[in-house]
Length: 483
Ligand code: URP
Ligand code: ZN
Ligand code: ZN
Image (cartoon, rainbow, N blue to C red):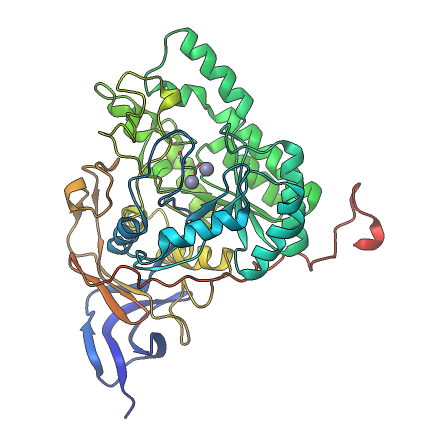
């Protein structure tokens, strides 16, 4: 008789495209059997009456990332991965960020040192490219892509991060030639600077004016520009953290005319609104992130984009800064202009439970939930089928969900080192009860069994190219015989 290290029995298991009542057999960290009835394992978990889903893959989160303004992220790899784990996420992809003047290799080495001995769950790294020198473009990026750093984020805003249009084209061209995925933060930097100066001159500096300085039209403009560049270079891109319906419509239009284009959104654009930037005193600073949450009615459009396939992934964009902290949201004091408030909110632990509410409310089906939160990001970043799916041969990263008792989100119950959650008081219908990574139970009903440092680094495959590499589409830029 076959023996399994672990058998998960009697649950309803989310296999690709179907919810099936079956047992899951695990050996040596991998799924080795899926059948109606399996023999007992060394350990058996009774999942009767519960859902068994793939461990979440959070393709966009910031842990222990160096900042340029003296602020400090609340979560390092220990607290960040602990928080992810309790929210049902078993793979994270944070960012090794290049500081201008620094080599990309140095940024990657530094980030490995930050993860080492701390990460409790498996992780890959994206790069953030802020200084695309000839050496970065011609030598470092190709070498790092070949080693498994196959995605990089570029910014169209933030003074210390943004690239010029020409630099963006250079980076896209490297992605095209070497088969990498470029993630674009699409907001128009000059428009933000112009609006910020005017708002401040009028004394409008409270957190709510962060939203006024970054209206939807400037996200739409930058999104349109990024898509145009991707068409010009003929390389797929991913527009990250899409917040406004206008930007989403630009994406939908481009997808409709056959552009290979991906889009990500985040729970903050489904559950928060610009009203959350108000509140007594400086409270609104808790919800300052970029792009900002939009007016309440905008959320329905983003849900619709999830249901209709405009978006292929939902990530947390977890960027935790403590509220009551001079290295956090109060960096320049409690009355400082919104300009000085570090951008970003915590959310790695609440991403899956919040989105799951959309399943229970009938906004998206379970298949789409799994795709958006696990399979989609694993595919996007070259980790599938090892991650993001329940299939024979895949890593046994599994989450047993308890949908029998609603949970009201409260900071005191969360595991990040941040001192607040923007979702305080929201009730969700379900929460991960048991979280398994590579066949080991790491979290169970609020108890942690993971060890710091047990998460493994995952080199990523190159994402599947939209067209064979080298087969450029004929355009004004490239010669027809190259097509
Ligand atoms: O406000 C945000 N989103 N902060 C994190 C950095 C980024 O742009 O994703
Ligand atoms: Zn961003
Ligand atoms: Zn981000």
